[in-house]
Length: 267
Image (tube, rainbow, N blue to C red; front, side):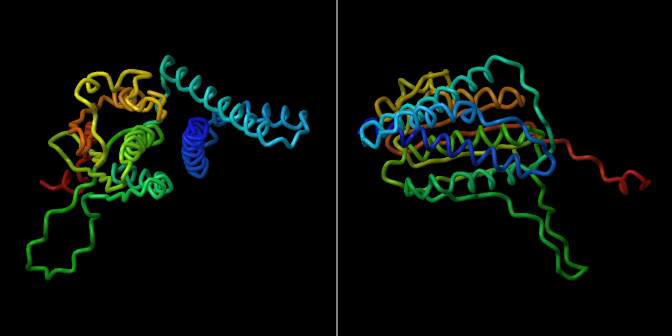
């Protein structure tokens, strides 16, 4: 049972990496950004298995486990390299709502498997105003613009989303929110999971620390999210109640809106 759980968890992580990689490759603004970390040694277990030429189920099962462990170790090594080397951030001005919507799509298969409903509570997009000219127009909706590396920010939020889903053994609702908070943009990931024990709350952002025990967990995701937020001059904090759930809050500096050119010309 532990072997099966381990294999399933590792396969989940690989599939998420594939989705992110495909999304980057499909983006016309970006060139290829290198191979997926787990691709470099993909051929090794396949070659070994072909050489064995055996149909024994136990042999194949162990070969599958070995292959998945190679993928996992390669991913861990790549993440460790990312933790120690300077990052070349590909910064761009993006609406945080777009990132949250993209994360919800990436996480959809995992949500279905964990019986979790993902809810987006985001400011509405600006719509055309069809009111009469003499009627005062409503306040214009303000985009939640931040300057970030979109790929890294998706990963930071996705880590929190997947962590929340895994904590919800009985299913439930996971909510993604975003709004402006003075000069900052605030995003929230709220789950209905088991919560974080008080004695573990000071350690959850430490590399390799995990509360999952025998259920798996690399102890990398939350540490990675913390570091990505630091790279963007942001912050991440949380509130958690055991048995009720956890809410993570991410704060990023808002992009200062450029003054309207027509307004500048008006005296």
